[in-house]
Length: 275
Image (cartoon, rainbow, N blue to C red; front, side, top):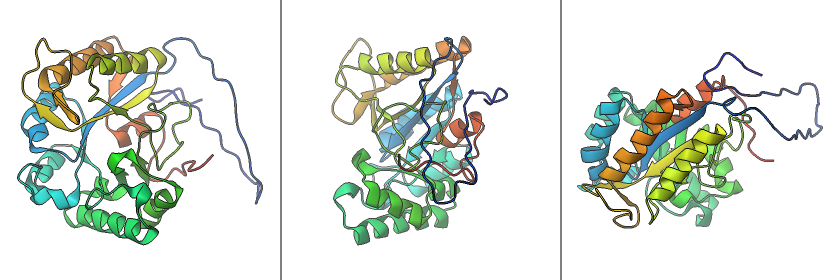
């Protein structure tokens, strides 16, 4: 048990098993508050409205955030451009790859998937976004074992998906190429408040992702549309996180920072890729 880190975690190391397979299981019980919860906020595709409205709100509050741009879309007027991404990166934003053209990777051929992954990673490296050569997010949160292993072959270390919804600090080095996440843009915006509360109450880690920010939304309970959220709702979610942070039960971090808070170096740690 690592008692010295911001987020307590358990790490089990099994040595000298040669070609054998080791299975580790258990029922984990701990007092309330034993695990500090963690919230990670970010955006996929990164529409221009997220840059104009959400990022100033996040930075004003000192919230870390992750941007997952589709590289071919950075030339579109409706998306964040490379200079905009670089501006945020230099201010501390974590930038992950999101493929070159946003295909459903679970449906792609192995050759097409490899090309998408290599080109998006090369784009990140050529623009100086080293975090984007390290991590990525799957378009549509869709992947399979073949493309997940292709991501590893391309040089990525972790990839964000959707299955499972929550990260568990008791086993943080798990599912490296399909890290679970939470879609903030539900029709009933209060579902996201409930997700944040669950993360806090159970000491979980949550990657909260979104897309297009729409101004306004005060007094409105529903979202403005698919893959959209109101600025007023984002402010409410961040207010909720800040209340938990003030109480000492939650930290705000980015994805690499979460693993480091658990006492894991995400660059050198061998993650469990399949169980």
